[in-house]
Length: 169
Length: 268
Image (cartoon, rainbow over all chains, first blue to last red; front, side):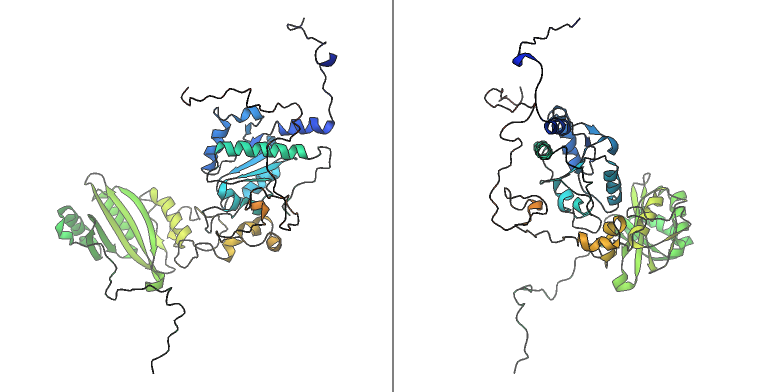
């Protein structure tokens, strides 16, 4: 016995919404963007703040995962050193398709102020990047906006198109 | 006739250089001026050769022979109560003297004094490890090897500590360029994609002042972004980015500012 009686006479008679398959799939994908915890430096603090209660990523369906195999978007938050570069490539390869990458902050975008021998001058030398967030460090609002732009980008694509594996080369 | 001098870079040169300017040095004092240090130095001198000793900024610096380093530190630790090795590393003097100065910074908690043991080694010479005396020397000696290429004999794990194991070059040498040599600039490309990928990925952009106004990927011109790979003509219309499509999104409610409650008081 249902506790709440469903009024089938509302909304044109049935609890049904008609739409296209693309939109449903894209709705699912864009609203459950599980992000990989990838805090490398101080941008990671802002990323954590964006995930915590004040900015609350959970309401976008963005939940941080500690495993690349469970995540859809990699938020590279911080300075990528040359020693670590092979691991970011390995973790990216372990993520399942479809996958996206947000490069957060100056260091991840271009190497930032670390114009030195030990820093990778932009993560796009290692993995393909979908979205670059400027700032040092970007505020949590910027990251939220970035995730919303990424959702828009996902919605703009046809879900049924062949998923070409993303490779830098 | 006066000898010709090129005047093209006259403005770039410093306008005025003091011929009598001497680089300031920290004042050195005689070890006798501090009785604790004087006693310590007596003990060291009775057993080992001391090349030079003085007090600088209330700390005694003692120059010893490189082959004595383990036994001098043993003496300092066991008899003179300098129980901590707070820091050790090397200084590059390759240019002027073809060698390194290795220093050991010692601390005595009982005496509340610090002593710096220094020794000069020629380029390519290994030092004796003091890891058996001080556990802190374990990583310090690895760092010294990593940054200067000075090996420590009898070290249990003489490998690089900060840079990758397959790194070439010693970054803290004065001859090492800050932005890296050929090997460093291609390290990640060579390792991940192989040398043949160099051409496709391209060299690093090291000039921080580089702004290409048509480089839409690096957000140089906000509002004129284009998708990757698009041919850029320079006449792209301005696009205002919004996080939602105009027609709304399936199953997602758009924020209506008029219906939402704005909290003015941040303390609430």
